[in-house]
Image (cartoon, rainbow, N blue to C red; front, side, top):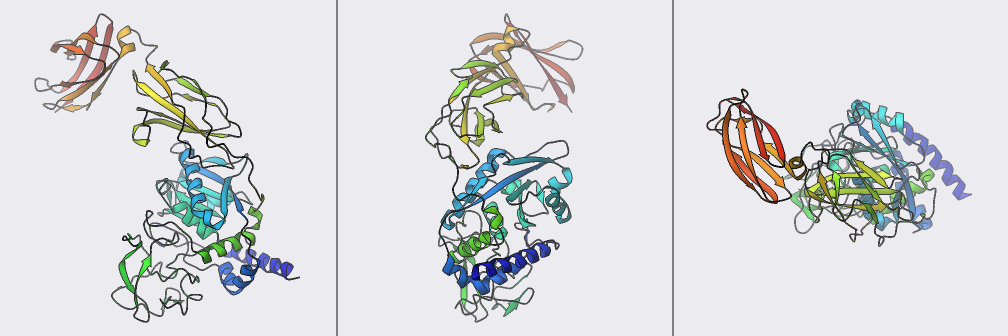
Length: 503
């Protein structure tokens, strides 16, 4: 039976690959730390690819993922689950032409790990992290601060990603997932080689790897073994031109000049240039999933997703409800099939990261407590996006927006409830002005006093405060180095700020 012999061969190859995957990794550059070697599986696939082409199905293949978010021993600096979900969504977009989709493992989509040695690690620490935490029969994705000096690597049935390289416009996750499913770099063999590109390339490079020629005569035994990924010798990050090609001109062993194709996700082109896998790369990844990673294929169709047209109905606070600025709760109604909710509070109704004051992603919860110092005495805006493990992409921008107003409800006087004051810089160098930013709900008069440590009034002036922000310069020309108290006072009460003037 040809199918049975096929599976038996794959079993032996899988065991071989598992054993070889324990070798030490050498970073290719500061971007990807995955080994330059062609895997034994890909060597085998090259000689048997015609059998897969004959058997190929275009059915969707679904890959379960558990995200491991690593922080410090103290439980600090975990990567945002919201951004991690967005990264998985980004992989789905890149892998869509391959009919490969990723979903979060139901009931176990994310695990948090507190370990400083794994948070910033060399490869030995990465091996310990993976061996201690990997879950069989799914893709394990670890997010850390520093994965051995690289943006990411694929190793030991896991991908490890740097948090700073995991933004929404970054291709690191898709690149490392490509490695996980057997793909080498398009410049495979050149990873640790320096070369003068004004000269024709040698016949071999690296560990006696044949150098691919532009005429395709050796494309299946040279470079990355794929004939629809043209030659590429560039082993460091590079920019692309308007034609999606490298600015760097290269010369093949036959003295033919060419430029590298920047669109391939397995190249080192900049993120904005990359967008695709080639058809032969897609064939290889699907074959790898059906053999070496066959245990990933646990479902043939996804469960119900979240209707992209549904709004999350906010419960409270809405309609400009007043809340304690440093301790309040946001509540919303559950959405059918949703298990993951991304919550954000922004300074303006335009939203966006630039004006975001708070964001948190929760799992199987419909409320979140904000117990931090959000801006006091402000009108703020909040909204919630809904996802579930099967459906991590939510393009719906028609979201209900809740409006809240922050106050210091526990203030000791009425002035503190309607006015806030922020002082910067503090300390301030003598002779340089400090800025007192007073935010008010209403128009009022007040008096400003600056007193020194002995209680002597050094400065006094009348203030007219208007609704919104009022910026007041605090001149220090007449002040000696020392500690001063700035007071703002009227019949509503008193606000106090401490100012340090340095020499």
